[in-house]
Image (cartoon, rainbow, N blue to C red; front, side):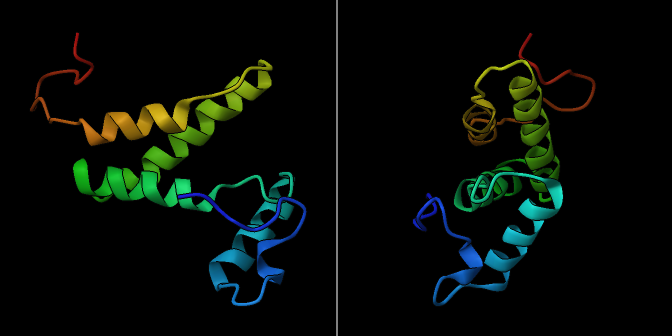
Length: 105
């Protein structure tokens, strides 16, 4: 799922915009992010996958970790595939149980 609003416009200015649209616009401004830099659909899909495949509290933690990883990559001048990797990890998650690292090693 991707956001369909043209890149140069704020989501909250579109007809039929939601509270979420206006919140994301305000949050981008508050955090000094470029306008329309948050792919709301992708973040919501990631949160859904983490919540359903892992556990409900995994949704915000996973979204935070992906943002952190993407920010570190950006600071190094690199692109990030953190969102795709985290989505794949959530969708294939099988709890190894207590006493294991869960890293597959």
